[in-house]
Length: 426
Image (cartoon, rainbow, N blue to C red; front, side, top):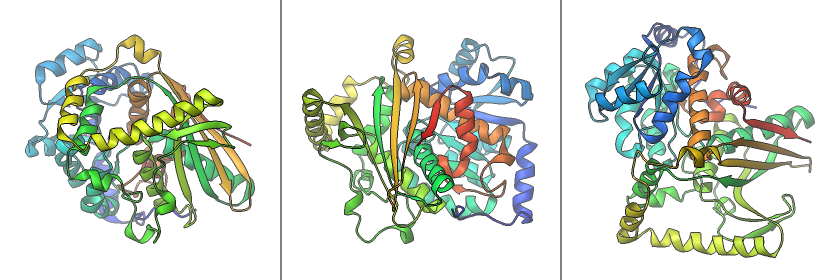
């Protein structure tokens, strides 16, 4: 399978110096947006992480409000481990200083289209690796246009989509592709995923959704190949369009409906397919699994209809304003008990051109948009901070990447050790 474009020779001087400089920086990771709902959870995750403590590496919390950062640090008993950095999203000098001080930035400060662009630019400028939890595909398309070539030439990994959107989808498809090659010597030409989810919504996620729907980005959001290089875009994209109708699927033996995260996750998987060379015939789609029987059929039909109506309604500013008024505010989200009681399960089926078929499963306990997202993005950052030499294509590889192309098996193994199920069956 081809490596992602952007890899440079190991002896390239500017890559070696940039990598060496990163290892000598004051901090291993800076958690940006640490006072937000998911941000607070990342601080708690880092404070409790024995491997990070044992490594002796320093980390820091960053945001615009010193008092709130102090409160979060104290609540997580991290005073002895973490420093505090002050940097507003529009303070370019402060963001430059932040990026120079650390090897990795982990950002949970959304909507990223409003608050993330200057931070990513600073990271690219100073050769600082970056991960976040965005699902804002039009914003990431802009990052690709502005920064992919520079980040690729300097060996800097800029990795959006490191939360529930889109780690399960991206690693799931990657695992099936790897397993099909290893077991049968051929690639998957088709992968489909069916999700079962139980969880709540936090205010930051809702703010990001409303920002996309209320901007000129809405049209771009519908492009199935938005994140792919133009040369990897098929002439006819109709076969890759987002599902709009219910279907009874023989492989899953269940009724499926459109999945509300599909328009995000499918774009990320298709970018991985382009970067990692899955082949021109590769097809990926995903759904929400409702179950078997007439009740599930009725639920799939109802959900399909309501999603279509809801998407059209959100084009109206008044409806978006009402949704914003009713939704949790930024910084708010589900209760601890609700998050602990959540879960997700992603079942995947991969098929080769000659009919071989493999099944995969990615699952975890905890609210997927909060608990699981926190685990995924923190472990993504720790891939970069603790295991840089083990990452795909070596230390000189960079660009605006996907979780699969940036981390591959390193993230798979870290998530398994953190309690997440990631398996491929016959």
